[in-house]
Image (cartoon, rainbow, N blue to C red; front, side, top):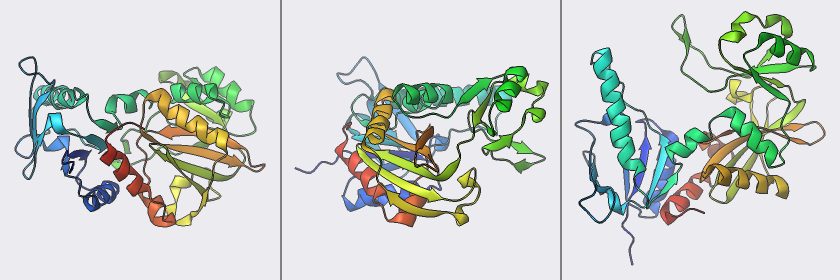
Length: 319
């Protein structure tokens, strides 16, 4: 019997990684509806009824080319959606409109209790707090570098001085410009003399440097684990992708089980982990990106990552 239940893909207009997964779904003849919350209005509409029908969230999501019955959605791939800013409205009206879109469109989608989410936005948000990530990783037996989160300049200086090398990392990526130039928060070296009273304004994350030989990016999709060793010679390999080389590797069984347990803890169907390899071969857990990039790794290694996502979304059930 043919399963014609659709997969929803929520993402921005230009998303090559989502394109790869959608191509795999098309090969499987799985119906796909792609949308972006920023298109709310003429290019995106949604309706849902509650209380007057036997199934919660009965209704439709409509784009210019598709109409989806919400009760029939098999899975949702929440990739890189953009919420509307309503820049054409006054500041107060824009805040009102943005809030009603998030809590209206978002609330309708969150009310769906049948489909598999990869990943549910609320689960992504819960897993995006680095202090919580560090605590869970340590609880699961993963090796975590000494780390301090503080807004006390004295504690920050003492921590940095107690380690041979330390870095500062952002607690969360946020859009940032200086002089009109976009800036990215890398993992940057820090010394005690650089720390001043400005640290007191907000919490900062400081971490001891791992004496790295290489890095690992580990993508987990359902119960499939893809581990790629990244050779760079850089403290933060994201600074220059052209200088990277890749090798597919297998994780030690206890580490693989810990990463799967990590995703289970946060109720995630997928996630991208960053791990450092020291010169003795030891593995140091660094962080999880619940919705990390992986498309370039498939292109570089040939690993069937997009097929794994397509298969998970096609099944429409949690692993």
